[in-house]
Image (cartoon, rainbow, N blue to C red; front, side):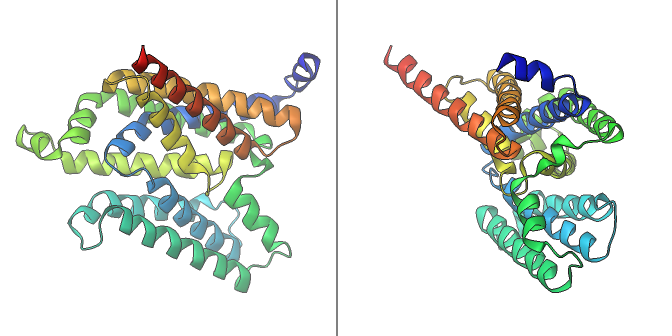
Length: 279
């Protein structure tokens, strides 16, 4: 097994996959804690299905770089859900469900009716559950991911205190002079970017795992926001590396392997938290 790993690590695409996987997992876990605490855990599902709709439209229009459609559409929907949705008649999980199911159905319908590809089922499966695209990354794609991830982490560190206050009590944050609406928009944009990038790693149906499992695992062991955030980031990175390596060794899909690692890690943390409480 070690010899096989040494052999694989001679190839740049393996290094690229691990770098991108680690960065996406790190960014997802940082803002995942906030989303879980604000009861927006399933925003990953809703926005990833919107991104799937964007991919479908780009495929039908024969647009090579689908990011030109996917990114702006996902960002707009994220802002609407996190900001405008709070004052709408359809709130929280209901708006997530409407957005998720509607975008997924329309995207699949568009691909079936208008797609020029002869392998629609394969394209849909690859987009929904992840594909080998994480193992075929180019140097410029890795560079783009590094730059975007650096910006995301920097924004989180710069506005950590304000994100904390908006997360736990938005009304109190407004009363103390914090422009909660601005920070909601910033978080919405960042989350949309993370989700679009994360689709390369685990696919649109599994992206919520990168947001939910690290945060929930950390909450089984820690109580403070800072501790939960730090452990969540470390947990997510370890699971991402473990999943990618397991996928390389077994030939399993990368996205499913990463999510499986998250599930195992969550089970371990839940057991550890239960034992700690008994002690």
